[in-house]
Length: 447
Image 1 (tube, rainbow, N blue to C red):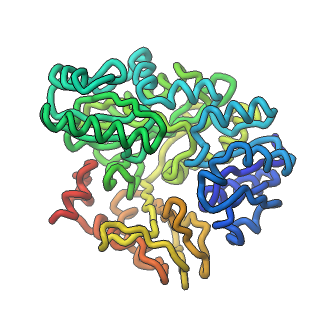
Image 2 (image 1 turned 180 degrees about the vertical axis):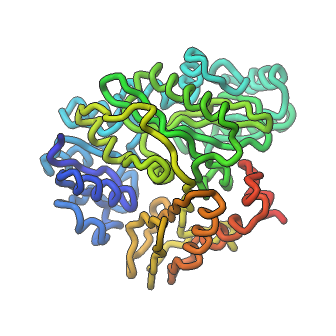
């Protein structure tokens, strides 16, 4: 087992890893930017090292500075968390060349699943259903029109290096496609430095269901069942839950088996997520792999009782998983709400600033994962996540009731948060009846 680990991240996930390491008897080195200097969670690490100015490009994304901090901190491994360098195969390769363990998949596996177009090819080879679309990247508007006419409008243009909804456009006809192609390519180039675009048939009103996977370096690959992430706005997840409330058991089983099959084909180990969309007829299609721990991983932890961060660390250290698939039996229902520093009444405008007072909720079945405290200043430079509120109860109805109570109990004063939109969703009849798809929130807000 590692004796000392550097956490190449910040905020909630950095604190989550610090806590897991403490319970495993592992020392931690936290890195921070000037914007995060003095953040309370840094005091819980054994050492904290500044890696640069506030801008992520000058600090958290600087591989040379992160590696320097790892060498100064005398660590055996780096945990990348989520975001920043977590899915950067070059960073994983640099760690390996410096004889520093990377707590995640190998650079080779990350490359196989990291590019969405390559991942689709791998999925097809592994017999995993994919959305009908182009066989590779589209090189011109003319080719885009040709493919779109073959698979049928409407179509979805997607950046091969994309994420978070960037580089995505829907087109309903030839004229709209020309404009969408230019916009998606330009946005993809600006966001990811890669203008590569592929085309898929647009699946209307799909559900977004993802499978949590976990594997070791000895050939074991398991799934921890599914999470439903359909409650989202502009491709940004708001609420996640497990199990998926409308998924037939037969489809659930097939999706989980497909996720494991794809992970094995990629030579993958560690924690990861295989994401699918499910149409109105319960047909499922692979969309991408997230080669890291997910923001919503606590949902799976609550229903399975498995600590995913500790598992990541043990697997990276070469330990075998002491689990079989039969051991992983989901119990009850879990829901997570992402509480962001945004104002839903002002088109979700970011609301950085000082938190004058925070009172987290509690009680049976309630978990609050957050790095913020009273007096903490939410910086404007990074993701606006304040905390994750997770509940776990025997039934979905009880979980909704507990989450509603917990959201009303949560006090965050001094800034605006997304609590009001979460309460609105939870009170909606369609949500109660599990009649939710990825466009549900937009339709609800349009009324």
